[in-house]
Amino acid sequence: MTTAYILLNTEIGAKNQVLKELRDIEGIEETYDLWGVYDILANVKAENTEKLKHIITNRIEKIGQINSKLTMIITEQTTSQKQQLTFEPRPIIDQ
Image 1 (cartoon, helix red, strand yellow):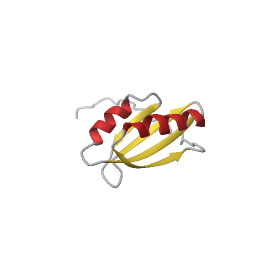
Image 2 (cartoon, rainbow, N blue to C red):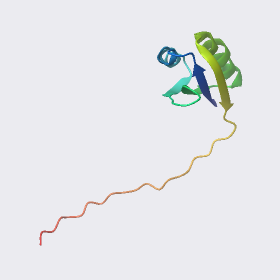
Image 3 (cartoon, rainbow, N blue to C red):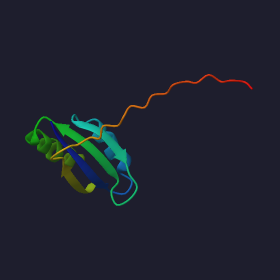
């Protein structure tokens, strides 16, 4: 599985429409509404780099109203193994 994060800068007032259209594209796992230089962050997953390229060039770029984009393809992923915290209830003792 190939994963990429794409930062998008949209035309003024177009962010909500672009977000809506992104959510309908197969392969886009998550979208985030941002404040700052970029307006949207999209998490894209595909079976291989060719399919990822297709999603980016044939689907995302065809939406329109996107001024610029920055694509970051994940080459290696590491995750931290957090210890599972357990909660043990304690009886309340009235004094």
